[in-house]
Image 1 (tube, rainbow, N blue to C red):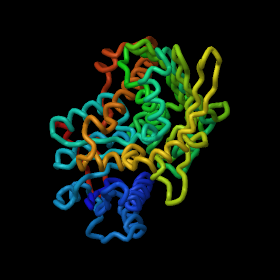
Image 2 (tube, rainbow, N blue to C red; image 1 turned 90 degrees about the vertical axis):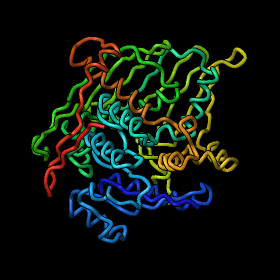
Image 3 (cartoon, rainbow, N blue to C red; image 1 turned 90 degrees about the horizontal axis):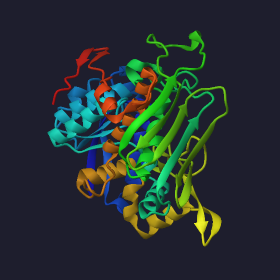
Amino acid sequence: MKEIRVGIIGGGMISHRHMTIYSNIQRHAEQLGFTAKVVAVAEIDAAKLEAWRQRYGFDAKDCYTDFREMLKRDDLDTIDVCVHNNLHAPVSIAVMKAGFDCYCEKPISSNWHDANMMTEAAKKLGRKFHVQISSIMTPQSRVARDMIARGDLGDLYYVNLHFFSQRRRPGYDLPQFTTDFYTKKVAGHGPLIDLGIYLISQILFVTGVPELKSVSGFATRGLEYDDRLIKDPNGFTVEDFGTGFAKYANGMTFNVLGASAGNYRDYGLTYILGSKGGLEITGTDTTGGKFAAAANANAATLFGGAPELTFFGDQGGRNVTVELNCAENGNLEELADPSKLLYNDNQVMWLAYKLGILNDETRYNTPEIAKNMLLLTDGLFLSSELGREVTVDEIKAMSKSMAITDQETPFGTIHYDLDF
């Protein structure tokens, strides 16, 4: 059985979720026909690195404060990037330039410019590249995509996506998260790219990644905050609210609203309208997939419940509402066809793609989906700044890099050369 040897860059919260996933992959190795083992880790914070080493029983020789030293090894098969948003592009490009295929945590980056740079680097350097978008790795998303592709909904004309939290600012209301989440220098933006990568990308995936035409939007940091709770010297500089209206070449319109804080209750509301039918999407996965949960546990979703679909439409001249039972039927699918496991987890799909079990036609092209998601959000932010609707050509032309090119560390400055 093939074992893929993985090196992880970044020993923070998300790396522990990835370790759980790799553990669950090992538990399912017989079904998958392959397994994965994390054999090295890099983390710039020496104390955090030592805690990580002790937690997982690693030898000190396999733990690095400088990831560049880890990349000199010749016994690693792939690298898993678990750093913060504006380091995704420079670190992933450095990984690919060092000769490694690369798996990157969400979002691919904080803006379209850097996402495009990453996908172009992968093409030019001949590396395989994949991005974590767990929301599309579910029976829910597959069923919705297949129904829409078959024409069950007819012509799509409207999508509504709202994800609203009364108080959910990572690093501020949620102190278990680092303050890097609310600084523009590191995070880039707020909820529209944080949770938005899951929710907006799911919509693009199930609707076939239509071609964007224009966006009108508004974004702000609307809620008051307590200066005493701002622990980062860079301040709270990302927006906590954003909304926009996008138009697509296929005639579909997309209304999106995302907030990490606001004076209203928590709620989520996602539905798709077509000329023949509609779909309500509930419980979209926002936590890394079911393999991200410990053994014999279920992964949570932000608004609760398993990822499910409800169909609304006409059957024989009668209005009907049909619960599609995606979770139950998805489990039956896996029992009948174990290859479905390759489509039900990010890292599983990545490893299958890395091994050639899946190819560019049979895997989900997560970098392109993530890039198109950022094209929409970049348009929303640009429209808010300019006070008018913006075209897709304007968005691409005006999207500017937010990648960190000089990173201060306890052992000196890391300079990232983004040329490839």
